[in-house]
Length: 165
Image (cartoon, rainbow, N blue to C red; front, side):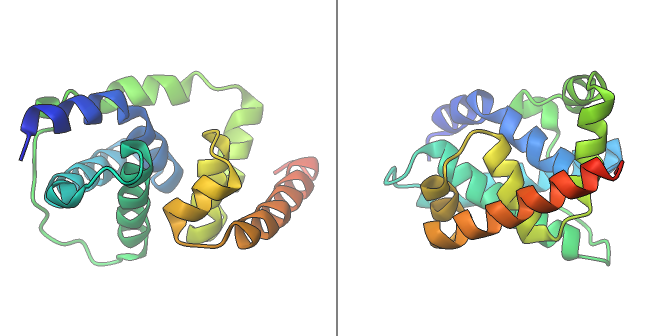
């Protein structure tokens, strides 16, 4: 296993971990735990990364699956812990980015958190600039299904935003 290459990939795409964690956790400690879980799962799965898809796509798929599982898990378990600093990840840095948001972005974040796990994952990927085909690949759906769901999600968010959140 090439640890250096893994760390380079992780450093290059660490913001997507922060975005996913921010989309699924309200509190900084929960986000920290989730990012730790994502890093552990990425490391465990790394030997299976074969380069058929972009690293970021592969990373998103694992991060989303971990986030959804984390979100669904009601019972806290003893987790494998890895100091995030060893991977060059800083949750405080991520929190500063999200705390600097406008009121409209905070309202949008709140509305996104109210979505179910799948719809939340879809909108987070969309907001990160991924197209329907790539989202479909990451989430294991068809592009048509993604397009239909995205249209409904956007309508729901626009309606709720217009109502004042």
